Image (cartoon, rainbow, N blue to C red):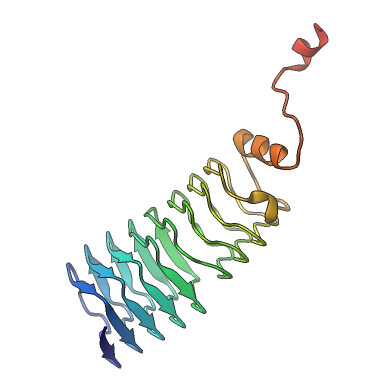
Amino acid sequence: MTTISDEDWYGEDLDDVHHAGVRFVEVDLTEARTRGAVFEDCVFDRCRFNASAHESTAFVGCTFTGTNLFDVTLDGCKLTGSTFSRCTLKPITVRGGQWRAVSLRGADLTGQDLSGVDLRDADLSMAVLAGATLRGANLSGAELREADLTDADLRGAELGGSDLGAASLRGARVDLAGAVLLAELTGAVVDAATADEQSAY
């Protein structure tokens, strides 16, 4: 694996770059800009992405360790299969994108807006998503064991196959489909008949 260490890429324009199998160590990407860039199977170790902006950029199968993503903007980005460990992930601005099978285990995403993000099969176990907005997000098959979704907005989210029953959901907002799923997880039998229909029996 090629290593790039201690580079200063502050404010760099990195449109259309392609890096595969590169280890970035303590690289300063503060206020950098990418558009259509591809980082595949790369490692970002103690890097700084502060106030950087990324549009239609792919970080596929990447590992982020001890990296600071304070005030990052991710617009339509693909983070499929990437792992975040001991990273600063708030505040961040996220506009859609594919984050399938991403690992955010134990991440602090309090109050973050992840509306419309594809989080299928993501590992969000022990993540703190209190007050987060996940409207229209796809959480199908997501691992949510011990995740804190207190006061989170889950309206319109795809929740099938996720282990919501193992998450903290106090005050979480759900739509009718979400309410039915939660009822089923607790063993309740959902009867869709109205009161008038029931009185006819």
